[in-house]
Amino acid sequence: MTADPPSAGFPSLTSPERRVLLWLARESIRTALQRQNPPELDDPTPALSAPTAAFVSLHCGRGLRGCIGTLAADSALHHTVAQVARSAAFDDPRFPPLAVNELSAVDIEISRLSPLVPTRPEHIRLGVHGLSITCGEHRGVFLPQVALQHDWDRDRLLAELCRKALLPADAWTRPDCVLMAFEAEVFGESATA
Image (cartoon, rainbow, N blue to C red):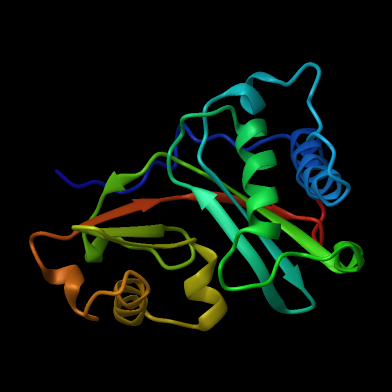
């Protein structure tokens, strides 16, 4: 069974919750650079305590400086953000670990994910749906904003998703490949949270 990703039932975070998560992501990176324990939230709201999948992207100028996340909603959102922020800064294999002198120039963006649902290409809405493809041991993920950033149409998005998963560009048409979609609430330091 396939369906459109849920729009209803995925309420946005409040502005204070967004600010707390952005602070938490930055402090998690800062404390890692200083070899300290990550910060803890004393009294997180229900939305910040709910198990939620998330990605943290780091940008320097207009360029990506790191992006790590999880599709699994198996930890409280505030824990997930703290963990993946550190991973984006130090464990993204595409980039060297973030240096102390880079932190002030980094802009943090958080993508809070809705649950994943099976989908078909005709249901994909560019800029709204993020995608995951899994085929055997291969997996690729794009956040919703990627298609818009690169000005891709749906076919190009699917082809690039397959390439990211180290699959042939048309692997999304194969019955043994699973295409999943999700929505994301995306917010960052460069925009008003």
